[in-house]
Each structure stands twice: as C-alpha cells, then as structure tokens.
Image 1 (cartoon, one colour):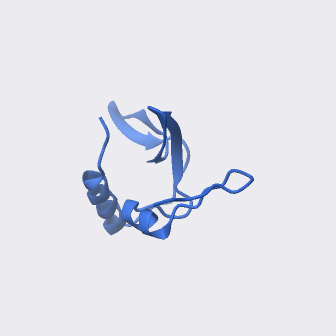
Image 2: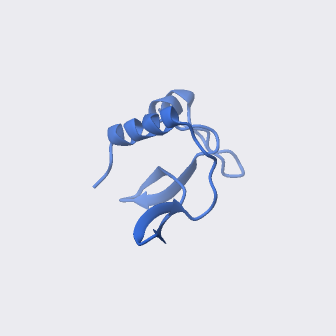
Image 3: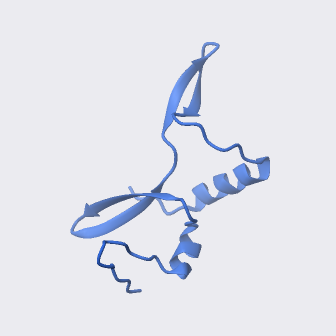
Amino acid sequence: MRVSIDKIGRMVIPKQLRDELGLTPGVKLEAVVEHGQFVATPVGPEVILVDEGGRLVAATREPTEPMEHDELLHLIDEERRWPHRL
C-alpha cells in the first residue's frame, strides 16, 4: 500500500492498516531506519520498577488514565497476538 508525505513531513497511515495494527489516535510510535527501511513501532508508557513493601512493582513513570478490567484483558490479548520482531 502506498502512502505519501506532505510538504511538512506528515504521513497518513491508511485506515485499513491502522485497524489491522490496532493503531488509534494518540498512539505514540518509535520511528527508526532498519536496513534502509522506515519502521514505526507502537510504544506504550515508560515503565519503571518501584519498591513497594519489599516487592518490585511495575509502574508508569508518568500518570496514566485508569482502565476497566475488560480493557486490560483486551490489551493483554492484543499484546500476545502482536508479531514481535526479534
């Protein structure tokens, strides 16, 4: 699928690709060049480990919106299906 870049550098990702990849408005992407190709990978909030009562707990560096249990399960399922690169 071909896309174009406008004069200020913006590129529109076609809806079909956004839907297939689960990209929604506001998603942040890490953009790099790998082997001469442009690669954009969705990234989530930065996660840090925090000591809470002698146990390490994963937390986000910046506050995030709370989510419902069903939404969390949906995100976990999406992550399991994501075609990770090695």
